[in-house]
Amino acid sequence: MNDITEQITEFLSAALRRQVGPDDDYFAQGLTDSLFALELVTFVENRFALTVEAEDLDLDSFRTADRITEFVRRKLDAPERGEAHAQRS
Image (tube, rainbow, N blue to C red):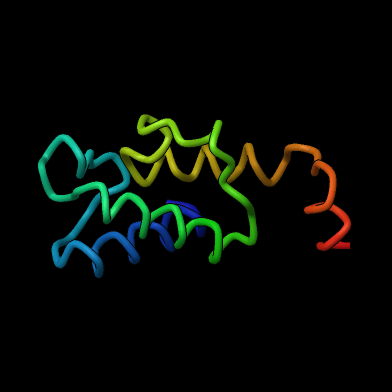
């Protein structure tokens, strides 16, 4: 497991109060709700210093720690746009 996935699974396990593996779909298991989804997006933005745009809000990208890891890697590799880029420089 890589560092990004470890950070995500640690957060998920603590927030859900049960051990979560990288491929566990906590939404399908009924462990989460829409309020938790917002908390998860906020965690991802803060922990990895990125912005989750409205067009990024696809539940499939946030179903498992592995999928979140893929999402984070795509966002970090993607070119920055507009003002967000200027603020990070």
